[in-house]
Length: 270
Image (cartoon, rainbow, N blue to C red; front, side, top):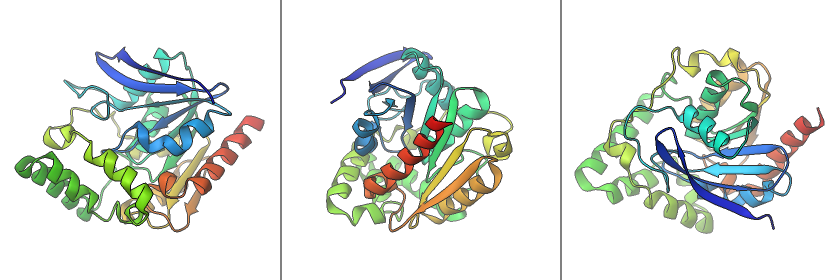
C-alpha cells in the first residue's frame, strides 16, 4: 500500500489539513459542503495506485482552520498544491468542490489539466432554486436557534441525503461526517470572495477536458447544473450514474471509480 503523508499546511494565513499518497500524474480530490476528506475514502488509496493523489479539508471544514477574513477557495486550493509541489493536476470536485475547481480553472490558468465535476455546484451566481434557498435558510436558522447538532440533523434529513441513507453502511459513514461538522459556515457569514464576473457566467472559458458526473437521483438543482455544464463547457461530456443520488462516489464506488479512472486513462494516453 502507498505510504500516506499527512500534515497541516500554513498557507494564505490559515492552516489546511491534507493527505497525499502515490506517484504519477497528480489528482486532487475536493470535497463537498458539510463533508471532509473522509468522503473520498473509497477513492483515495485506489487512485493512489496509479496517481499522486491529494485530498484536503477546505477552510472551515474537518481539521482545517475556520475563516477569519476574506479568502478564496480556489486560492487555497492553489496554495495547498504549491505546498506539496504540485504545479498542475487532474481536479476532481464534488458539489461545492466542483464549483471550486471551476473557479480554479478560470482564475489560476494551467493548474487544472482536466475536471471531473460530480453533482457540481456553481457557487454564487449559480441561480439556485427557491426550494434550495429555503432549505439552506431553514438549516441556518435551526443551527442558530437550536444548536449545531440540530442543524446537522435537519440537513441529514433533507432530500439531498435520502438516497445515501438508504444504504445502511454508507449512510452510517455519511452521518458520522456530517454530524462532526462544526457548522461554522452556517452560523457565520461566509467571507469567501467570488471573482467577477462569477464563474457561472464564464463556463465557455473552461478549456480543460471535463467529465460531468451526476447521480440519477440527485437533487433537481444539481441535475440542472449538470446539463448546463455539459452544454456550455466546450470539451465536456456527461455521465449519469444510475440509481444513486448526490453522494454518488460513496453510494456506488465501483461504478464511480471505473468511470473516473477510464476518463483519466484516456487523458494519460493523449
